[in-house]
Length: 247
Image 1: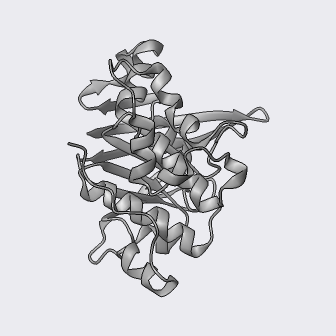
Image 2: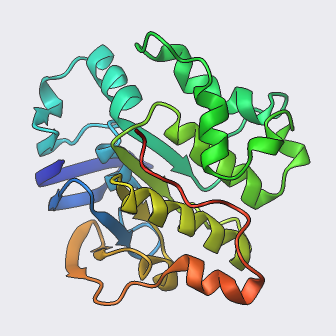
């Protein structure tokens, strides 16, 4: 699904050039769950932005489902993002005066699908928030807000989920509930790429890619990945249902 070859990305900061990525090569197959780790400023988010078609590399190549990104127009990139990629961020990015369901349905405005009725409610049901559809973000806990953000990422039924520090603003239990949803999505066939600085979170994935100073320095399988739902037992269980594959 994802193929980056010798990708470099440089930013200019205070008249100095900062090499965010240096000769990075990475392949991610359909259905994988990959954690990208590294210290602050290592290039994790830059790599995520490139994979999510939010930025372009200065050199090297990026193929998403065999489409070479460099050859695509801005409109092509926007359509590809909307149809194939769901984004989840650390800070939720929910509109404060808009209900949970309305937030979830925002990506549908740009959808090319003919029938979008009921998709927002279905996405909320998948993350266990059907009864919170009419609530504003201020009426939800941090964990619930992040689940609304996940539902928004799911509403167009993308093949790829990109999550940038999705548990960074959450307590332990809420973080585990969110990670359980990502694991369920992966079991249901979604490709999940998760950026995190937390080693315990990374161990929930099936593969860990480590970045230091813009270079990929390690790429290893997780021999015995942790099951978030099993860890939740100590907190009295998880209120969100398991996410099943779309029909």
